[in-house]
Structures are given as C-alpha cells and as structure tokens.
Length: 568
Image 1 (cartoon, helix red, strand yellow):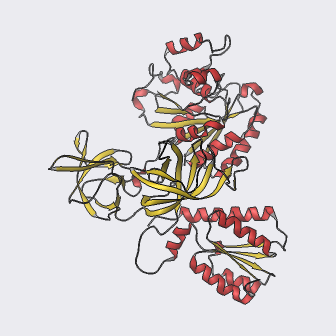
Image 2: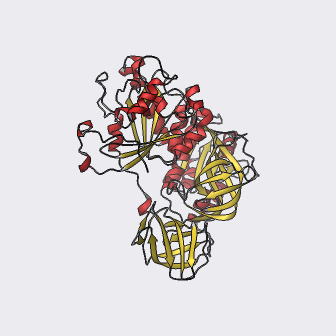
C-alpha cells in the first residue's frame, strides 16, 4: 500500500528514533456534525506531522477556494470531490495514509451531514478508533450523538471526543469542561469504556500534534501522541475457528484447495474442522500461501487449505472448530443501518450477503428505531434512509453466524435490493430467534434463553392493571418473550403456579397483584434468580419515570446475561 509520506520526521518530533520503535497499523475515523472541522483536523494532522508534499500545500495556497488571507484551508487536503469543495462539506469518505516514527495510520474522513450518515457508518466499520469532533461554540449536537451511537454500535474500542474551535472561545476551560461532562454522560449511557476528551483548535494547531501553550490547564497528551499510544486492534486469534470458503481451487485432478480469509482463530495442519451446512468432519492436510507451504494462518490472513478427505464443500460454506460452533438459524434479530433512499418494505425479499454466503431474506418485523436526541427506542412506523432500527429477519436458508459483539466478521451482513443491485442496509446480529441447532431430547433452559435472548424473570406490580398491560405491550414490541398474569384471571394463590409455568418456559412474567401480599410475592421471588425479580409499586397510578427506570434495569440485566453467553 503506497503512503503519501515525504520523509520520516526527525527523532525530535516525539523523541523516538524511527529505527528502534516497531510500527503498528491503526485505523481511525473522524465523525461529527457539519462544520465541526473534521477535514481541517486531518489536514492539520497531516501537515504538522510533516507527511504532506510541498507541492500539495502550494496547490492549496493557490486554490481559488482557499481563503485569500489567514491560515491555509487544510480541509482541501481531504475534500477532493468538486462538489465538496464548492459546498464546503464532506460528502464521501476520504481515506488518507500517513506514518510517524511510532506507527502507521489509515484515516477515514467521514461526512458530518445527516444525509450522509450511511457513509459515516461505512467509513467507520473497520476502524479501531473514532474521533468525534464537537464544535466548542455549539456543544453536543444531535448528529454528534448519532455518530457516537454508531461508533458504539460498530464496537469501536476507543472513542476520542475532540472539542474543536477552542480558539473562538479564547481557550476557555469552563466551556470545555461543560462539554466534557456531557460527553462522558453520553459515553456512560452507551457503555463506552475507553473515552478520551481533549480541547483542540484544528485551525490553529492547538493540541493536534503538539501540546497547546494557550491551554496550560489541560495536561493530557495531544491528539497524535494519544493515537500513537493506543494499543493495536485485537484480532480474533483466540476466538473459535471461523473460515468462510471463498473459492474452490482445482488446477488439476491432484489438487483441490479451499481459499478464504480466516475470520477468527488460528488454522494449522492437522486441525479437525467441521463443514457447515453439511456437518462433515475433516482434518487440514496442508496449507498453502503465496510463498508456498505454511505452518499456520491467523485471523485476518488469507490462505488456501487442503483436507485429508473429499467432502462436499463450496463457496459460501463455513469451516469451524469442533468445540465452539456458531449459531445456525434462519431467524435472527439485528440492528440495521438503512442506507437506501426508498423506505424499508417489510415482507419484501432482499439478497443477504453474510461472509461469502448469499441467501434470500426478508425483514419480518421492525421492533423500534433509535431517537438520537434521547437515545430512546421509539416506534418505527416507516424506516427511511439513515435510520437505525432493531428488526427481525428471516432467511430462506440457514446462516452460520456469531453475535456481532463476539465476532464482527461472522456477526455482520448487508442487504441488497435484487432489482437495482443497490446495498440497502448494513446489519449487526444481536441474537438468534429460533433454536440454533437441531438436537435430540428435551428442550433445555439454556436453549430457551438463547432463542428468546434473555433468561426468565418476574416483575411484581402492586397496583393497577393498565400499567401492567402497558409494560407488557412495550416489552412485547421490543421482542421480549413476556406474559401478563393479572388478578382478573388468577387468584393470588394461583399466581405461584402460573409463575412456575412461565419460569420454566423462559418467559418474563408480569404479575399484577391487587395488594402487597408479601407472602405470595416472596414465594414467587424464590422461584427466580435473585437478580431476575423486579418490583414496581405504582398504587394504580402509572409513573413514566418509574417505568423507564424499570425498563432500563431490564435491558441492563438482559445485556449482562447475553455477555456471559456462548453460542452452541
């Protein structure tokens, strides 16, 4: 891959000798609202790190679009499309490559306008880190929240909030701290663990490559130094083996190899693999690379393998390890980033591409979409371009997948319109909706949990039945396996029997009692795990705040259960 590097900076740039520090690649994306200064930041980063050709700078200085006086318009280094230069906004994703004595970088400069949210999701999909630009004069905007949410949705490990244009506020610390607190609250809501907030001025160069003398109150490292210190991306070497077959190579009758890229795990000769969907078992006889025979292939590496026996295997099949198999299902729940100008058509068949496998699929039900102002789930009446929704899908043939949070390669897919051949959506798999594998014997509680996406639980409501019905409707619309047990259908002594049946079926039991009979409540509490019993005392008066807190507690409980799960 060619790099636009003029020369290696001197060791004095960061005090590191080039020949003594190993270089690791870091991919990062910039995001934020319109005019927050993403392209200017990247231009300043490239210029101050001395990785721009002098003739490029001369060209920008002479550009009719550049300001006639004042600092160089660094955004012209990345906004290459004519429409971008004329409108002063980023439209498409621009990729730039540069290096420092410490490491190499690939930058994805993504659009900030809401209209191009799909481009941002695409550009950030392979990023190890995301820089969210925030205009210090405007604070945290809806689009900034949207891009931070997408970063968390894509599983980006490190998120950096760069509060830009501090020069317009005379480098005021109080203004920065207000934005810092709000962003940290947002990060807490989204469960982002590795967050760094720093004040910068992309136009003036403060805290971009060098620490700012005009903000002595901030003692954190400048942006480039922080990026250089980030750990390399964690490849899926320690995960279960996943090897999607891309090509069957047969140059002669004596050789039959299967080529592809290792999605996770490590392949080596002698390893036993299972082929899906056939279920056939075979061992790796040999592995071939560009330079000849090889001893292993790690996650992210391409290779060709041969097997010790002839089995039915073709493009789209998946080779997996014996001990940890993926989900096998025709029904799944996923987050969709809708990228098409036509609305989502529930029931319409699309083409779904998952790893190297193509199947027909339809969106059977849209559960909700995300309101980026409040980050709440709201009803999804019509899904339009750039919306992010949670939906259930059905495929005509089984998929072999992992959850996205466990494996981004086997946990993601795209939807393609079969008529226009346009990519309409990108999907991240949250759970399987039916039994992952066909098994003999009784249905186990673990199988029920994996089908429904949660363990059984009970919610005891002392008060009016309308609140219980409202709660049941909200949970049902979100995809929970839930059932209301009310005093209008059961007597208090019968509540225990009903709760026992629902607990064994893996459901969420909502128990609407006419009073606060502690004996019945304690008897039912003992049926469930201590963390799976919730109480809401409303005295027949619906309380939105109390209900919202309960819903948030339930979602956190469900997510904690999912984080401890392993596919069958």
